[in-house]
Image (cartoon, rainbow, N blue to C red; front, side, top):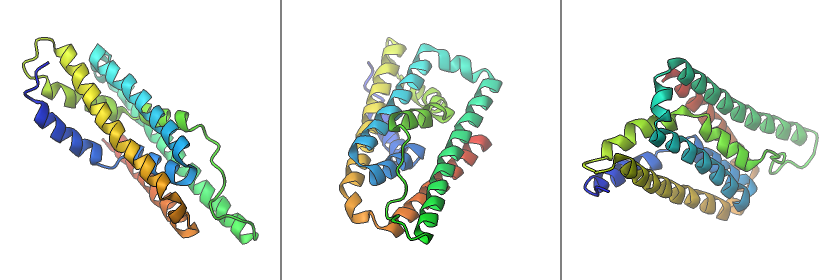
Length: 209
C-alpha cells in the first residue's frame, strides 16, 4: 500500500463521517427510543450494506452500474421511497401517541417499534446509491502510486468503514446512556419530528441529485 495519501484521506474521511446523514439520524432515534441492542443491530445492518456497496465498487460492479442511468435512477427512487416510508412510520407513531393521549392512555414513549432494526439499517443504507457513488468518486482519489490499486482500495475502504463504525458506535452508546434523562414526551416528539423532517429532506435531495 502507498501510505503517502493517508493523512489527506483521514482528514477527508473525518469530514464525511461527521457530516450528519440518514444513518446517523436512524441510529440516534433507534438508540434513544429502544436502547443499545436495537442500536447495535441497526449499526450492524448499516455496515453490512456498506460492505456490499464498497465491495461492488472494488470488484468493478459499481462502475458498471454507474454507466446505466436507468439503474441509478431506479436506485435513487427506491432509496427516496424508503426514506419517505421511515418518515411516514415516525409520523404515524406521533399521531397514534397523540390519539392515545387524547383518550387518556399512557403515551410517554409512544407505541413500540416492532420493525427489525438490522433489516431497517440494512435497507436504509443499501437503497441509498449515494454510498455507491461516494465510493466510486472518493476512494480512487487516494490510490496514489500503489503497485496494486485493488489492494489500496481495499485498505482505504477498511479504514473508512472502521472510522465510520467507531463514530456511529459512539452515537449509539451515548444516545442509549442519556436516553433515560431525555425520555420526556416533549423531547421524544421533538426528536421524532426532526428525524422525520431529516428523512424527508434527504429523500428529496436523493431524487434531486
